[in-house]
Image (cartoon, one colour):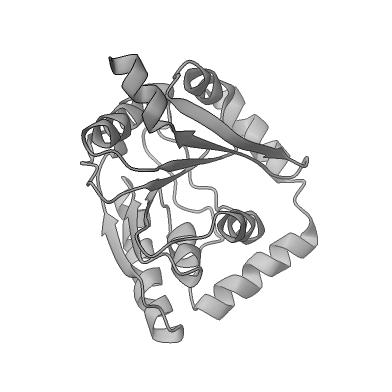
Length: 222
């Protein structure tokens, strides 16, 4: 697990100086602080330390997969709230950020308050401090964001919760995985009801997008 974390950290170092300046400018624009990696988790065997997601790749995703009036995005492991606030800027009407670290959760709350003061945000933003695998998936949640998804055991529990929800209340859902681990992708490949929509890897950034196939799921369950 440590090797995976440090390998990811080394790859993230290749992000250009220009990108770092861009992240700094975006933080200033929003009136928030999301760049420092000073808040670490106690249990690193199960949860990974905080690493901010690049503004550039978040914006790339949200420009390509545009939000609709009925969308509700969930950011698992929202950290200091960067993805949550960018989603609000890109017109996602409802956003839920889930974070288990109390210190980071407090920073996220502060960042959301500051951003509301600085920017004209119309989104409904909810922050929850809890274990992602135990969070109740509401019927309107339909887009889910994971950055370097946590330990496979927790990830599987979280995906099972999402799958159960969409089976009980059919709807189109998308899963966004930024810097997914190999174990995460192998697990997703074995789930027949999930279809890979896109995989992107330019050397600096890597993400995968999956969609739940309601028709295929019905055939499997029958």
